[in-house]
Length: 193
Image (cartoon, rainbow, N blue to C red):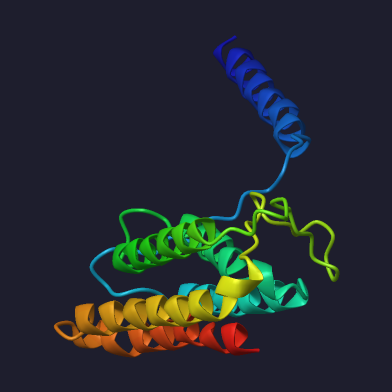
């Protein structure tokens, strides 16, 4: 009797396990991929590569708009998106802060020099229609564009300086922050074209 009860119990548990497995495997929905950058051991090379790629893609996306009046606010929006992609509580908190500050300063600069004859516009990538700005961009008036671009270039230089100075005390950060600072600073090229 005890042997039969154990066999029945084992068979019942096995059936429950098999019945539950397909339900889990059939779950639908988007797959979420999270990169965890542990605090204390300075950032992963994979995350650095991802961040540098994001900053490079920002420049390419904004260049592809073909509208020089939108460049400053486009870069602001792309840097904001890059900052939002950096998880809180990691070794990249300083980088996120610098990107957020740089984005806010560029956004304010564009809005202070807005072209009253043009509406704000959302931009979609010609290469990837799914990629678009998260908010409408503010065009800069033509008469202010040269001065705005010079000020934006100075804002990018400030961001690089802040990153490089914050890395001076931590040897493991120096190389990574230097690469990030160079990627941020490279956006100045877009403002000169």
